[in-house]
Length: 391
Ligand code: SF4
Ligand code: SF4
Image 1: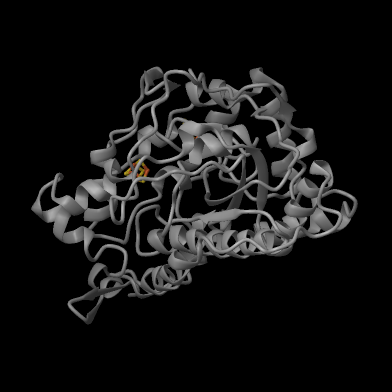
Image 2: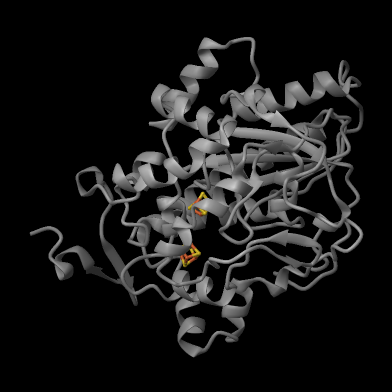
């Protein structure tokens, strides 16, 4: 499992900070996605797909399903319930005095990342907070958002490679995979923000139940990934798209990371496997377009949201994550292939084909561990027996 391999790497490289070999990544001055900083407008969190579904803009069926789609499986419901406890503790009072030995940005950055890894983050990166990465309004109560922290710390949590392999991509575990990573990254962000406040610096956690920031540009500037074909998703070279992220913003002096280039723009141009397999036909197969100052591939938010919310054969959807060739374990073999794909562009077309030839992206029913059940008005329906899976 990925955590075993990442822990092994961290143990064997005790002097290194990060669980994954980020020192082998090519660092660049700006993200590989073209961003016209002067053209990017701050966005309103209420304009997201789930808010639109909740308001009925995608039709009455999706509006009705939105109100149950996160809790219709008991595990995703339990994870969501835990995440909700984190909503009111994102912010807090700053300590009265500044802790000694916290005036060196390089030391602080290393210490904060080590703290994130101690709390079980899978990856962490730091950037200056771009002003355009702050939402204009909260999705919960419509209140205007003003946030002037200087730095942002991105925290990634793996959704679990073994489960991703077992899954069909849009069955009853999909939402739980998302909410596992949302709740865990949110927990780490809340603890880290409180710790920084206790050290005497303002800090705020941002997680799925209480964001004030747009996450993807922060991950790009913090060197945690490149923008991929799956809409607004950032892809990490060691986790693929198989993660969720939380953020801590702060004024604690921190040395920042640089963006990374591991050839993903070229790889996604050659691949398109997520677009081919998307059950909602939501991912574009064409070239990049410019929206709100970002040049990127486009995804139909209405189609994706409708698939995730309205899925009657499962809970949510993560097919694009499952089939992506970067969704791999951290074994020595996969690390070797990963390095070859990053360093040698000529290998990429072959890697895309080989991913299909070797059967990656197919479900592994023998690895399945979760229950196929659905809560319908408080009564469980055994969806596996209905489809004959258990017979
Ligand atoms: S989550 Fe599902 S519907 Fe949405 S883009 Fe990914 S594969 Fe398509
Ligand atoms: S499946 Fe292929 S095209 Fe889609 S995000 Fe992954 S690498 Fe890019």
